[in-house]
Length: 134
Length: 143
Image (tube, rainbow over all chains, first blue to last red; front, side, top):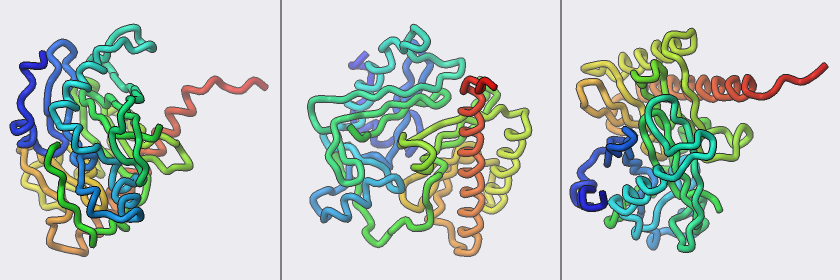
């Protein structure tokens, strides 16, 4: 599967909130959410960093989380059995689910704080992920 | 995501406060509007919540009217298909002809404020629908 996912260069051409990758086995689509993508953290002071990663502006991934890495990670997570349904995330019907995964490495900033957690949500046919509080 | 997005430090995003509609579209397979939103922190500690609003119910018809009103205000060339929050005070609108309108590019400040007002109505409406759904899922209290 990993070989089939496009390169980062191709994925960066996808428009905001459009589909980066459709998971053939489940019909779910991983969409791009630019408001969670890396910004130039080094140019910000502490207050600016808190503001630019708050609820209005969206938490932000570190730059090591490329779009391709995020797609591959999201596919992997979507294949984990959902304990509520006893099966992986699928579409349809009515997928509305959320998974929080704490990683060993930092993944991004939330309200100015470095965090290790990614929340992945399924809304209708779309999946997207963002850094979340630990 | 190797290339960090340049940021506009002058854009303070003061026009929007939670609840903020994050993503809204009509899902044909579910016959429902799928609405994701950034909730008021007093309503939920999660960064996003979501609710499905049946297309054919009163709430669904109300959402349809509000989305049509947005299309009218945006002078859209075709109906609005998806609404999403781009961060800060900016929103995106995909039309059914696949074109994209961004609120920050909209020329009229007066109409822009009207669009914000409609988006705020949608956000509050969706959050209320979420609360109603949550309430209906709770076991009823015994007398």
